[in-house]
Amino acid sequence: MNTLIEIAVLAIPIVLAVTFHEAAHGFVALYCGDPTAKLAGRLTLNPLKHVDLLGTIILPLLLILSHAGFLFGYAKPVPVNFGALRHPRRDMLLVAAAGPFMNILLALLSTALIYGVASRAGSAPDLVQEAILLSVQLNIVLAIFNMLPLPPLDGSKVLAAFLPVKAMRPYLAFGRYGMGLLLLVLIVLPLISERTGLGLDVFGVLVQRPANWLIRGLLGGLSA
Image 1 (cartoon, rainbow, N blue to C red):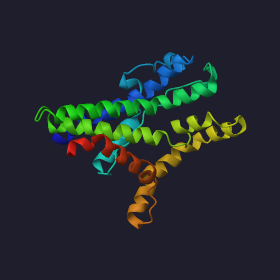
Image 2 (cartoon, rainbow, N blue to C red):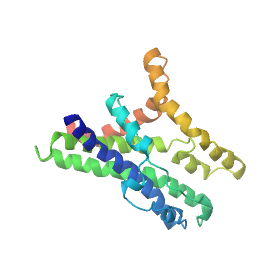
Image 3 (cartoon, rainbow, N blue to C red):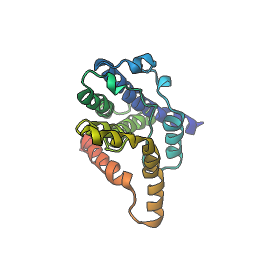
Image 4 (tube, rainbow, N blue to C red):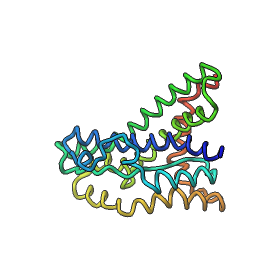
């Protein structure tokens, strides 16, 4: 029972992180002239509208139970019609960056909560404090990961905004293969790296290391 309670509590920051991330895309897209997300019922903070069975529930649960050393998840992408944006190139960048920006904002708010809890000893159960800390870590990881310039991640659309049309279209079209490559980077390569010592942990180098650096910077005051 305790394990189930822990999983349920730790699931809260995961669900909030991916829900606010996707909602941010939709709200900025609407502001820039594209109502697609609103018409699809995705312009909401209701997690049930954004949750993806594999990315929001199964994958994080497997990572928790396997003690993988990091936590990751994703939601159903919010539909965006970039052709409907008033200024397609500029607005594509704004819409894409909105998700990672929201994760950074959530990480900062969670950091403020941690310092608030730390200043009042015994004011929150250990599991709640662990969930708040997880929120900082997860949102920083999601922000950095999503800004990688690999289609279909948000960073690819930020980069695409600066590419000529002839290069932009095939670059973004690569997104159809991107998810398979992402699973390779997230799961397969770290396992091979751990068992062979070949240093194939791309996720660790590109995401986890800079994330740890930022997290230490945010939470360094706690050890002072």
